[in-house]
Amino acid sequence: MQNIPRLSSIIEQLKLRQDNIISVELAVGELIPFSDELIHALWSESSLARSTLVIRRMPAEHQCMLCFEKYHPLNKETSCPHCGGVGAKVIAGEEFRLLSVNGESK
Ligand SMILES: [Zn+2]
Image 1: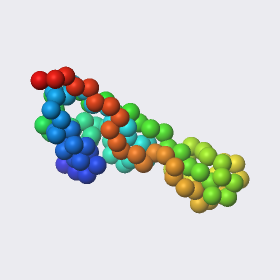
Image 2 (image 1 turned 90 degrees about the horizontal axis):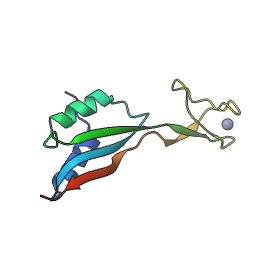
Image 3 (image 1 turned 180 degrees about the vertical axis):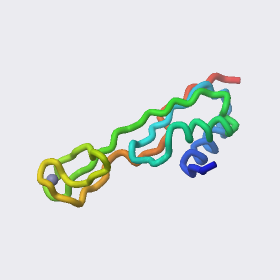
């Protein structure tokens, strides 16, 4: 199975907690190429398998470098819907981070 380094490091970080983890919420950008199924599968193989994993997909956002308008990229195209310019900066959609953790003391 594929490995997701950023998921592994979140799991490592959570293992250091002293409480029992009930549920974990992750923010995963739309541009992250890994499917929710893969993330859930890797989670269920980790030592946190007994906790509930919730994946929140964060929408992608690009910013045009010509007119500086922000837009949501459709079908992975990167031309600006406002001016037609190409060459946009990705300002959201590539995040992979811990959003919240619910735990109870042992
Ligand atoms: Zn533009």
